[in-house]
Length: 227
Image (tube, rainbow, N blue to C red; front, side):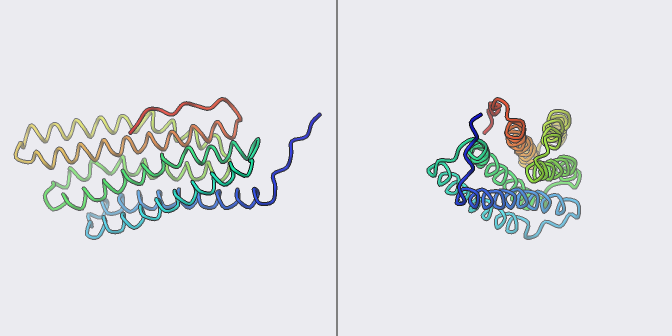
């Protein structure tokens, strides 16, 4: 039986660096979502967009560094499990970057419209923010521990709960728009925030699906079409 070649020491060091940076990227996403959630829970929004922008900047910087590290691994001839690992990370970077974008957009909108929005409008975001923060935490755990069940939990939560909460928020926004047409800008912004959070969940699921494929060594799952 032909033995698989062991990865070279540079590839092993590169994989350790990619693992650490990818986990850092996931932890920043958890921190960013947690900051938005906590601001909404406490109704303390001053400075939220500034904090969110700083976290998003670090997420984007890590994306560029990880992209370079993965391309270096490809050029060095990564094979087998190392190739699959780096491909999984490489293909997931755009998803995580979009997660950061959406979370920052929600943080900016919340801070801008909080003085004009009713508390009930902002409170409607809380269940979805809590759920998505938990999903991001489970995704980080799935990657760190090679836990397929944790990755599948992310998928389940999106399928069973995120979409339902999104529809609930959209209905609430429409109701407020009909009842108070003078608040149309706030209602439309609430609808946009709900849409961004729903798409954020889709991007987390794309990464979870890739991790499931990586750990099980199965056929790659085509990512759902999201923007």
